[in-house]
Image (cartoon, rainbow, N blue to C red; front, top):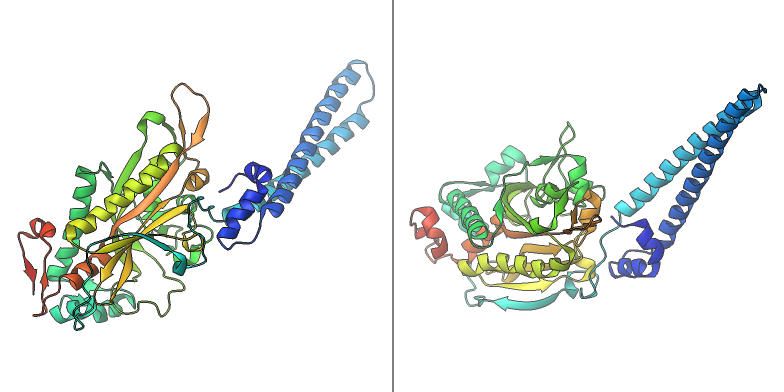
Length: 422
């Protein structure tokens, strides 16, 4: 969430960043509400000073034996006026906070312009997509033919956008998650974490999911939110903290189920596992000093890419344009894996640098050695990877003519040496 003071001093810059996002100008409105609030704060302080002065006069007048009834009435009136001003200031503050809470992060200077995914810019590719076989199957055709992927029974249990995996495919999904976690913890320095899957309002607000994206979340009757990604609890581990500079960067990873209502996704990816209400993901989160976050963003993206390289899956990396980025991001790289069944690249990871946007919402700070003043940290998050979509990519890229699936070599140790499913 933005500082009203910063917007007061940088209105044109603020509106320019919003314009790149396709959001209308808000600086004038913010500045007007802020000016009203500051004026009321000044009036409140003046009222309190006058009340204190009159209260002292009452004591002095009593000491002289004078009638103080008029002074007492004035003090009572000033008290009422101060309370009214205090209520008005709180109401304006709440209105200003609500306005700021609904505005997205500003894009970094090097984020390309554009309104939607058509303006995203490819920056590199790895591997060679196979365009040769026109008879290649999609993942759900492979899984259903194997009898190990069941959407019909899942629909009886829970409705659309759910799946039941069984046997070797359930084991393969678990192997993928273990493989990712082992790589990120033993080679890349992330701390494995098992966070709660239910969080309170403050945690959802801190990462920018509330209030704007309430309809995308699942909510329990007793006030919890099911996490749409482990980013939500992992990032909030720093909420309300003042960290020592020497402790940074913090790097967390977690394998969790994720839950998304997929509001607005009607008609998109209705077949298969690409867009589900429940899916699993290995998430990466970093908390850094501001001057380190850009390098950390590149590092995090490379960690996610390495998973695909070791699985032998062709992919490309694109930088998202300003209009296609997520609400909290200032810069995002999407990693898109090649799916031969669809004949196209599909997103499998999104790695974002959020700057201090989330840190301000959750009051996450650090203190440099020898200094009293604190600064907001920078937060970053990325999928490394979405396990379900990685399973999809393995099935489609390693499918065999006999209907089976070759197990990538990197996963065989996690499957007792199993070389193929079929």
